Image (cartoon, rainbow, N blue to C red):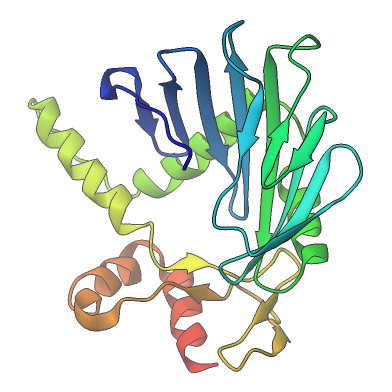
Length: 231
């Protein structure tokens, strides 16, 4: 098993961004994302081994000196590092600590194929500029959260409200690819004419409050969700 202790005091969390310090603050981890990809930035000090461990992987293949592809839990993935790895063994990727103390890598996923995961990365996340992707994610989330504007002198109440609104927009989520291909419940591949295909429904009680809310704030997303249930 691989794990690390950390303190919540070292965490930063906001829509589109998360950061934490691991292993007694010898490794700083930062994550940001697009619709179908993630960008990770790791900063190591001299004491930390420069390595990345992946878990819950069904299989993977080496794609050259700086890329990995495979499948995990029904999703195909493609991972691209910003530098060549020194060793790839048992889902552990080691890098040369002498060359750099910072490592970045991108992860793209697809329910259809590895090629579609690569395409999602190419279309949505072609840069290594972490701060740029973070700003883009922040702007996108703000465009959704700003659809409701509240004013209150109690900043804690405002924070609770927008945190709840943020949580309400996390599910269902898009599982079609940037080229609009998606895998149906029958396992076959289909292509949408427009919009996105959604998964992650929990309709036991969400029909009472969540979907009426989405119908008001996100009518196009709500329409795509209804179509996803009917396909």
